[in-house]
Image 1 (tube, rainbow, N blue to C red):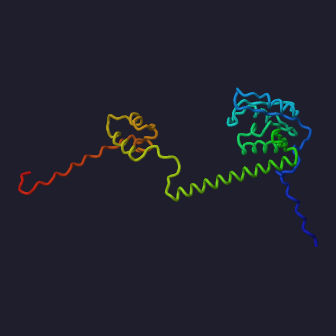
Image 2: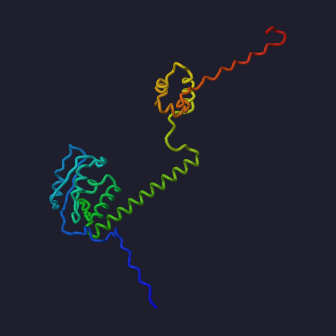
Image 3: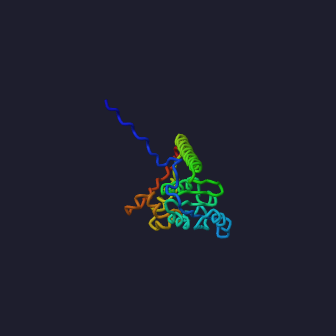
Length: 234
């Protein structure tokens, strides 16, 4: 009786202890960054040069600025087998999630990563393991934030709290706008300026304007005459 074949073990592309980079012998490429043009790069450049980097890119922009031109050039310059070297982790990523995304992208390309200050090196098994702990922690924090946000929204709905942006015009403003629009001499632009809203907002909250119609003034209802005491002339 033939035996069933034993399934092969699953290949895990993100196995933390796999060698990285896959192609040894690549170049060390450095990246430095300072937040303002007044700060100096000298110390970071010296550290990267001492680490053996054959080429160094540098930005003089805040980490919150998404347009880090030299970082983009650095990532384009790297080739499989190379290692990106930074003076410290905060020089590369704007946040933990951003850092993990960049290093994860390098890993998929067979490129290593090294941070001098933290002594983190993904070309070693220990460094890869530490970085995977970082990634797991970032995911855990993200899930906690999502869970807390959803719980807050559910509690607000249970209290009857209105969610989302407040309306551009409240009931009193709409009623005021309708009253002014009923006057032939009032223009839509002047009413919008008076209420502090745009013409588009006025059209949205007074939909009959889109059909070229204006609200009509409600006829005044005469007040009832007081009843006279019996015996007195009207």
